[in-house]
Every structure is written in structure tokens, then in C-alpha cells.
Amino acid sequence: MEIAIIAHDGMKDKMVVFLTANKDILLNENIKLIATGTTGGRAEEAGFTVRKMLSGPLGGDAQIAGRVAEGKTNMVLFFKDPLSSHAHDADINMLIRVCDVHNVPLATNPASAELFLHAIAAQRS
Image 1 (cartoon, rainbow, N blue to C red):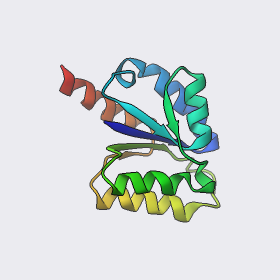
Image 2 (cartoon, rainbow, N blue to C red):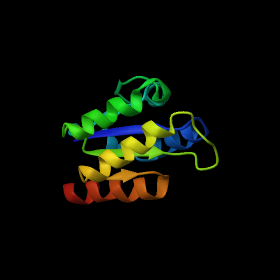
Image 3 (cartoon, rainbow, N blue to C red):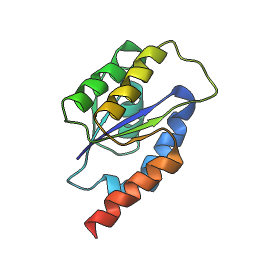
């Protein structure tokens, strides 16, 4: 299972906390992580192996959307900062749309992401 992780600047710390809290699930050999550039770097610093794409504003969101459309990415954890505007909103909306079109789970906050990961853990037991 390939899971994409993305976090806006104001949410990167929350993403690292989330990843660390769910390390037992995410370090499973059947889970591969991909990420936009900076988020991926932060995840690597926290001890995760991540395939990094470009930074979101430089096309990383689009790269991940392409992987969703190709059937390679099975889940997207995108911690959006709802209190800030982003120059690459068109890419963000495109990624959300592609997830909807291809019926790929998309969590935009830690609460929904936690539900998704607990569902994965429950399937393994």
C-alpha cells in the first residue's frame, strides 16, 4: 500500500507528530510512503523512509495526483492549513478532485487520518 503524505507549512509539525504517534502502523513492510519534498524531508528526519516528490508549489501535488490516477497511490494524508491561502490552490483542488474521481481515501486533518490508519491496523488483526 502506498500512502502519500503532504502538509502545508503551518501543519508540518502536526504531520511529524502524527507520523511518530502512528509509527507502529506506518513502519509495516507493506506500507510505502511518498511525500512532497519538504514534508518528506521532515518525515525522514523523524526516522521514516520516504520517496520524495517535488515541493508542492513546484509540482509535487500534481505528481502525487498522477500516481493516484495511475492506481499507484492508495491513500493520501494531506494536512491542509485552513487558515492560510496558498498560491498553488489549483494543484491542491486538482489533487482532491483526482482522489474523489478514483475513490482514493483522502484525510485533510489528523482526526480523519487517524481513523484511516486504525482501519488499516484493524484489517491486519
